[in-house]
Image (cartoon, rainbow, N blue to C red; front, side):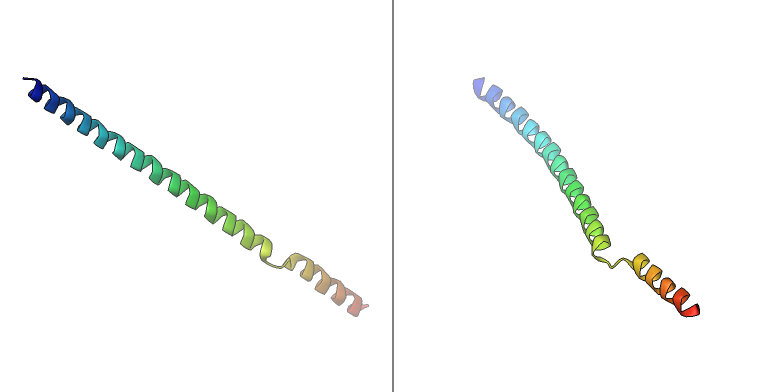
Length: 70
């Protein structure tokens, strides 16, 4: 009889292991997705900073035109 009870315990433990492994995988996938979003946001911010400031160039060009018109 104890062998049957041991098999039931092992089966229940296996079900729990499978359940918690699935939960762990879902949490890890969520962490990876969050990390990828953070990485993409950083890349977008860095690209925005690396581009030249066109506003300053436009001001310089418009200022040069105004001086030429005088």
